[in-house]
Each structure stands twice: as structure tokens, then as C-alpha cells.
Amino acid sequence: MSSENYGAIATRLGRIPQSGLVQSAFCGEPQNAEFERDLLRERVRSGIAAARKRGVIFGRRPGQRVKADRLAPKVLKLVGEGQSYREISHRLGLSKNTVLDIVKRHHAARIADRRLQIYWLKPLRLNNHCSAATLKSGVRFG
Image (cartoon, rainbow, N blue to C red; front, side):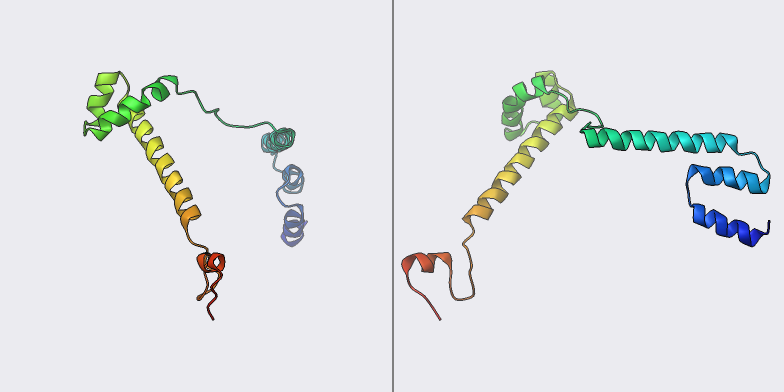
């Protein structure tokens, strides 16, 4: 078989496991191990897709932070007093990274609350001449 015909067949087959088998038949090179590996990869991917359709959640589950949640108010108080994360961790029996995580979660929650407040307190601008306050008072410009 000419190389032109082989190229056309290879591009038509794409990247399916059977293309490796066809290639080995045309070229005369044994590629059984690669073919088996491709079949296994295809079965695993289809199994993962089916599990996702059933609602299976992949990945590590979030753990419970019992001790960190219990000591969070103390940690935030000590941070507010200006103590270092290392001093706080030694005093409360936590790791430095746990203290850092508590502070990060607290700051993230404050930022989220602040964004919500700004969103709800922003005046509703209807156009350049009229706002929600002018609509309530009955005065219209324009």
C-alpha cells in the first residue's frame, strides 16, 4: 500500500484505539500493547463519564475543621492584638498554617459580606437624570 493511501486512512480513523491496530496491519509492526492500553483508557473514560451522569462526585471531600472552628474567635482576637501567627500557633496548639487558614477564611467572609452590602446599598440609576430616590418622591427631571 502506498504511503499516500495509508495517510488518508490514518487521518480518517483519527485517534481511536482501532486505528493503532489498522496501522500495525498496514505497517507490519506489532503494536498490541499500545492497542490494549488505548482500549483500557477508553473504558476508563467511559466509566468516569457514566459515573458523573449518575451524580458521583470525584475528588477529595472537604474535611471537618473542628478544632480550628472552635478556636477561630481566639485566633482572630490575638491577630487583632498584633501577635504573630507563630506566637498564636504555639499558644493555642495549632499549626502556623491553620492560623493562616483561619485568618484567610475570615477575610474572605468579610470581603463577601462587604460586596453584598455595596451591591444592595448602591442607588438604582435608571438614566442620567433620574434615580430611584426621585421616583419615590414623585419628582421627575427631563
